[in-house]
Each structure stands twice: as structure tokens, then as C-alpha cells.
Length: 201
Image (tube, rainbow, N blue to C red; front, side, top):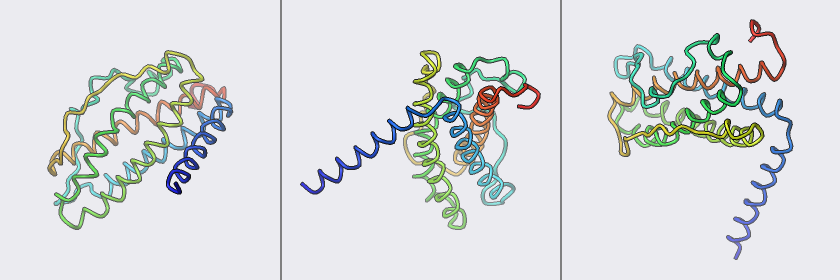
């Protein structure tokens, strides 16, 4: 009975938070999402920089990511030509595509040298938490921006078990690339919401 009360209490708290967020103006939601995505990208950048050039954990730039099939703007100028709804859809699609890979990364840290395990495990856990928070925020934001913003492109990830060090390095590089895209798209949305001139974005 006590356990049911606890679960019921947590559910009420979650519903209250969601209700409060849905009452927040779109501009404020965009600003919060942009801050969250900035933190997420900072975490991925920090991790790759810490491991960059390491003999036991080299991080190289890669191009064949499981999200590569998604057509996205390649720079700010192109992003400025894309509608708000489409930018949000792209950001949500990329974020959703990393739900399973982050779980696989988290469960695969034991294959690494001991010196790298602790850093990677803690940072990936933080990235998972930030990803979930950002996803929840973007889901609420998309509900306010119409059907186009709610569209998510499926980008399957075929790895389901623990992976080796070579694939870990590839995934980390891919995540850093995609987290930068998400952050860039949300910064453009924030810029437009604030009615800033394109050159200031």
C-alpha cells in the first residue's frame, strides 16, 4: 500500500510539472530547451576533448553515423532558411535516435581500460539525463507548434549488446556531431523567438 502511495505521489508530481510546462509561453520553452541542449553538447565536447589523442582511447572524426541518412542543414545559413517546425522536428528526430545508443554506450564502458571507465560512465549518465530532460521539453514545445513539429523521422540503431572500443569511439564522435546540430537548431529557434536579426544568431 505504501509503495502504491509513493508511486501515486510521483505520478501526481510529474503531471503537475507537465501541466506547469504546458502553461509556459513558447518563447520561454525555447529558451529553456536551448540552455539544455547547450549543456548536452558541452558534456559531449568535454568528454571527447578529455579523451582526444589518448593512446588508449583515440577519438577521430567520423562520417558514417546511424543518423547520417537524415537530411539536415550543414551550416547556420542553411538552418536560417528552414522553418521553425522543421527545425524542431529535426532536433527531436536526432535526439530520439540517440536514446538506445546512449544505453548501449553506458553498458559497454566495462570493455575499456580502467582509467577511462570512470570518466566515460559518469559523463554518459549525465548525457542520458540531459537528453531525457531535453526530449521532454521538446515534446511539450512541439505540441504547441503544430503537426509538422511533431513529426519524427525514425533512425534505427542496430546495435543491441555491448560494443567494443572501436565502436565506442565512433559513437562518441557521432553524438558530439549530432548534439552540435541539435544545439544549433535550437539556437536558431531562440534567435527567431527573440526577433533577433539573422546576422546576430
